[in-house]
Length: 363
Image (cartoon, rainbow, N blue to C red; front, side, top):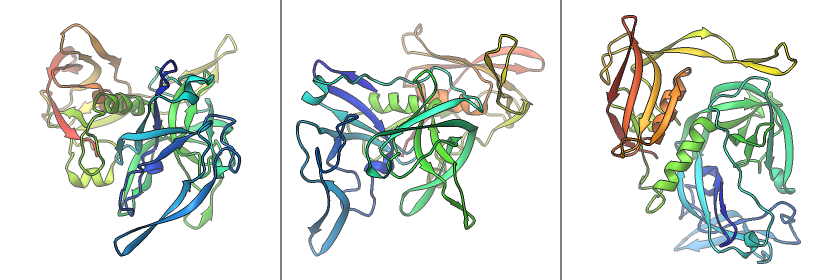
């Protein structure tokens, strides 16, 4: 995501489940190797083997390890932050001569928090370990919940994009791109069977609307962050959410107990406008307070959010709230000392109010 070729430094975004195994002695991988496109040739630039390491009287077999990697091709990385709750992990590369001498460029996120059904998308990954490949498809649904067991003891529910893009083991952690080459999702799973029926063309990607903000949060809190001792904290509207341990065990996004939603436009879809170009219709939701929380009254409709940095001038977030998830995701950008201002409709009048935030650990 960020690349300093002069010094061979980079930050890499992937899934937590790619580098995490809670059944191992060390749940987070302590050795990670990356390869650029065209250099990921098994048996030539690297060799994978099953490796068993014994700790005391107990043996642990790791799935595979790069045992004969060629230093002319492989890029060592370390895990500096990870979150089961969001199935995201941040990797850091330092002083890599491979990167210095490469044609690599950093990827970028889409500025738009919404995608539309029918939008063309592309994913890059290493399915089944055969080498880096590209698959293409469309967005099938712009927001859906799925379950994934990153930790072997429980499932976590994630809000994701649904796509018919072909995804197989090895695609995890690859970006889902739009036709402009911007990241709109982080691929993390595919559905192959449902209720004993075989399923094809059903894949999921974590939504960029929160992925890009959690990425920045991980960058800001890089030092001392571990999975077993959460070191990342994110903000929620004060009193607006239930964020106890039970909710963390079940949800990859916050549980909004005092915010409801109603619909104006029911579906997101693409169509041809009068110029022949593909246009899009957005879902418009009424984001409404259902209890007297965070300084709003029951029935107040939130229409806009602004987050201002601690200097009182720099605008960090400034967006119309047209979907409920936009409110929740934007609050990930909050830091200590920032100011959150909501614009809302109360009794037919448009008002603004500064509101407080609770900081909760991101597991």
